[in-house]
Length: 119
Image (cartoon, rainbow, N blue to C red; front, side, top):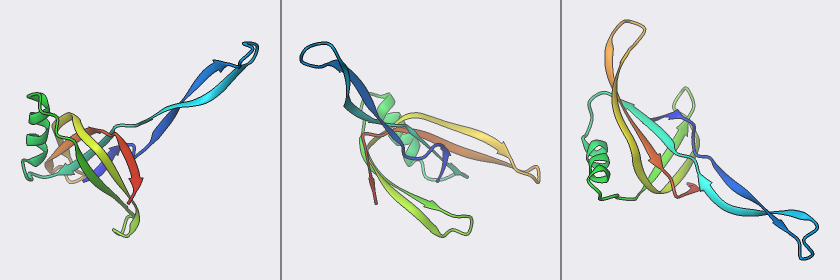
């Protein structure tokens, strides 16, 4: 699979509050949240992603840990992340045409992510 939109990323909410006397506005870190991650793979593969998506549609969200590896153009390792508590928020199958005019199917899945660590 490869990244389609963004890689692992997150944000910590900045929360405003007044100091004890109420005269100065200060900032404090709030809750962190993680960006969704969209992955894609080409070709007809295993139905595992569809089944994971369908379980969520049917009301059974299955949270999983997903290992994502980033590689360079030659396939060499550049980094890896462990995405924890993931579940699919979007699934789709699209048809793409390559430079030679050949048509191929691409499966995309967007994941909600609860936590990220370096692998």
